[in-house]
Amino acid sequence: MPDYKAMYEKIYHEQDLSDKSFLITGGAGFIGSNLVEYLLKYNAKKVRILDNFSTGSHANIEIFKSNPAFELVEGDIRKLEDCQKAVKDIDYVSHQAALGSVPRSINDPITTNDVNIGGFLNMLVASRDEGVKNFVYAASSSTYGDHPGLPKVEEQIGNPLSPYAVTKYVNELYAQVFSKTYDFHTIGLRYFNVFGPRQNPRGPYAAVIPLFIESALKGNSPYINGDGETSRDFTFVENAVQANVKSMLIENMSTQEVINIAFGERTTLNQLWERITALRGIDLKQEYREERKGDVKHSLADISKAGKLIGYHPHFSVFDGLKISIDWYVNNIDK
Image (cartoon, rainbow, N blue to C red; front, side, top):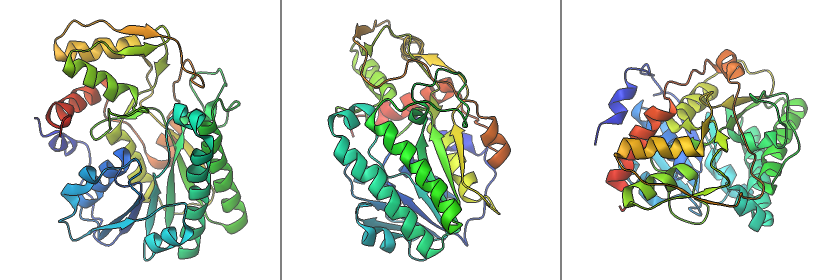
């Protein structure tokens, strides 16, 4: 397996984080654990995670447990006391904990609401009271809802199409209120279909790229919802890590901000499968079924605001990310 982390040395300048402490909620999850890895690599004074392991995995954080800078708080963001314990003596918070998946939210809107809205509010309150320097949170491109415009621009949103989208929009509203009412400013990262190593291909709510990669590795034809011409702005996880780090370390925040985090390029599901099979050197056709409820047909981000605000410039294309991800799954898919 290629040492893909060595590739990043050509892109990221080494940072001295030795005097900074971080909390990553959902740190045992996909994006959270990749962020933890980056922070520990650059010698953060403390990297604490808060996770209840409902969707996160102990396997994702096993390699960190021997690092003296790593701390695990096993708890639930739906409990304010757990949030208060987790933010104690923390400088920067990246709030990644949430229940993702549009289909999951349609099947169980109550739990999605409790975690994504109640848990988010608890983290805002605890972080405000602790006086953390910066609070960054995982927003979502689902907030754009039925707005037809492409590319998606932060100030132009439509009506939400799922309970999940509602919860993510409410997060932004709460962040706005906390900025105006308590002078507690935040940055919301509207992720566009993040993928990469440690993303779980198993379970009823798995994302499309790990599902496709697992199908390719096992020689199975994947199911595609709709005609395969649905398009997404797929974003490799290291681009999302970059956005989190830059947002947490930004200085002199004076207002609440929301920014798109994506690559800035559309890929259809048919194109995605073609690229994966080409990388694996196999000839395997996809199968089609009806479209899912709550899905938008096309998604593409304008990332110019993120570039201006935090200096975000994604370095990993979809193709680069697919190569790295496939290498990772080859070695880890059954481990």
